[in-house]
Amino acid sequence: MAEKSSIFDMIGPVMIGPSSSHTAGVVRIARAAIRILGSLPTEAVITFYNSFARTYEGHGSDRAIVAGLLGFATDDTRIRTAFDHAAEAGLKYTFQSVGNASTMHPNTIKVQATDARSGRSVEVLGQSRGGGVIRIVEVDGFPSDFSASLHTLIVDADDVPGSIAFIASVIAHDDCNIATMFVSRKGKNDAARQFIEMDSPIKEITLAYLRQLSWVHHITYIPTLD
Image 1 (cartoon, helix red, strand yellow):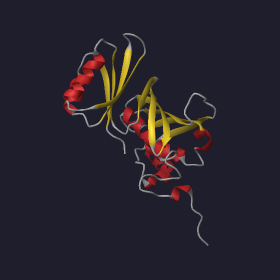
Image 2 (cartoon, helix red, strand yellow):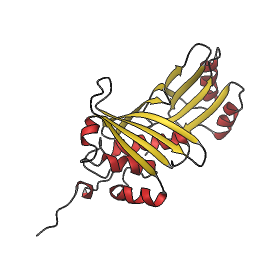
Image 3 (cartoon, helix red, strand yellow):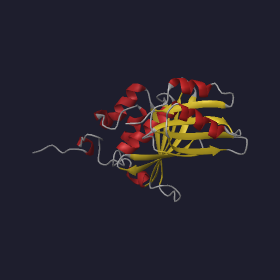
Image 4 (cartoon, helix red, strand yellow):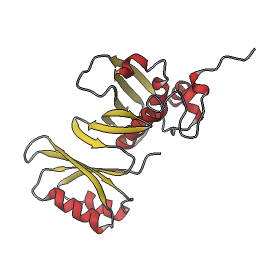
């Protein structure tokens, strides 16, 4: 008699698990979160919304999100045993679910990740759109709109006149083509955050130049996610 297999016995070239929405997309949302955080977290609170709130356990999204927080790729066979690896790494995590968030995409996840070693934390709201495609729609309360499938630059800066055009010009002089740009700000002349997707990598010397500008507070660079 054949042994009964689980949904995590389905191993393909691009994902582990039953569907790209519930595994590959979920892993990528977590991987985007840790790139923004700048390190692997020591603690995380994960909230599943709408459809995900009802299916995350049965479809393995809980293991997928933990695997992504550990830095595992979408085709890593360790996704199926992610809880064991999290215990070994000392990652503490909590799952929450909100089943009726009418304003949100059906497959939405919020990741609140903290690295106690550095004292840094991040809150990321992501959508799994199917086929492994994701959209990051909010970071630390700032609305955003990027996929992490391109090279992405996140710039925290003062809302000073000409800042957007200046940064775009610096990137252009690095021979980087800007694919999309999304700008959020808390208010006029207040804190602003630019989310810039580029077709090619940006040079480290360009990042160093942008970081030393007096009105730029922090820059996060996210190379293309797998």
